[in-house]
Image (tube, rainbow, N blue to C red):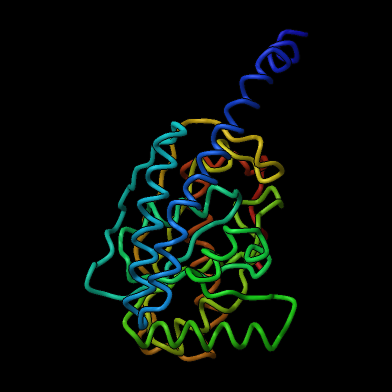
Amino acid sequence: MMVKPLARIALFPFRLAYCLYALLLFVAGIVLVLPFVAFFSFQPAPRGGNRIYRICRWWDMGWLTLVGIRHRNRYESEPDPRRQYIFISNHISYLDIPMILRAIRRDSIRVLGKVEMARIPLFGYIYSRAVVMVDRRNAQERSRSVRELKGVLSMGVSVFIFPEGTFNETGLPLKEFFDGAFRIAIETQTPLQPILFLGTYELMHYRSIFSLRPGRLQSVFLPAVEVQGLGLADLPVLKERVYRQMEANLLKYEAPWVAVGGTRKSS
């Protein structure tokens, strides 16, 4: 019965060394891409933003490779590269952020991100130039971010939103969704593209960045959800439909964070 605790103690120095190695590589990547991000940020939209995403994708791919994390996309339905989408996914780990860049292989995309991340030294500068920031505690800021996302879509650029807003710590497949992604989809008549991020919970638990370990990640593209002809009165039904689609598939793929019997009761 003492084998597992003793094994964890014995492996702790190696896990710590690995996490510090990954952190140093991450910081080195920031230093490398920072001048490019600064230069591209002065270029007109959307070209400058697209180039920022391209350089960040190279950084992301290099970092994941060097820390021993492999990734693959699985397509139950493949998005049309000629169409715009509002991409949405489950959210349960810090690794979900690099997953966005690995899963969605297009430069013409902008991510809705939490304003708190912009306060991190150096990384915050890159983050502020690459995402549309939102402060969910402030109604005016939420409205501003919605207007900015609509402006991004009007330029022919897709957007990515975590509809749960923050980490899912409920033991259910998903937290309750916010309305934002679905409202924007209806108001701009842009289809929703659900994706499942699998493996991030196992490789980096949301409680600690020092839980990182090497392994495999997978992004599953579910069938896109069309919104053509829908109005705001249809928002609750649309949100519930997408929630149920993602929930059912997280259960199908045996998402490990789901507690026994962990499904939301119908409202």
